Image (cartoon, rainbow, N blue to C red):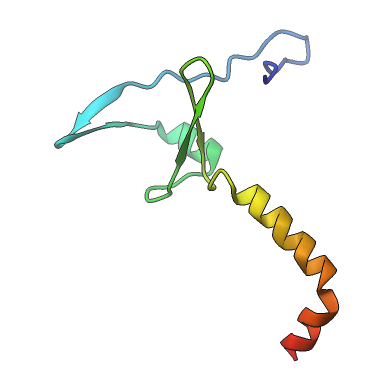
Length: 90
């Protein structure tokens, strides 16, 4: 579990933002404040993946949840087959 961030004086920092689910046309959505979008480097059209957490929590991630595992496997394969890949690239 993540520990809360602390200030230089050791006080916990509240990084939470309260969002409200709103009706948008025939759907519902969450409006993200401009400041939060800038801080998270998100823009209109970006895709977020919802990962369910224990205790009815949610985590939003910009990349696919299995992306890190896939990249780790790809890097391992590129390292093992470096010479063969270099030959194929010629």
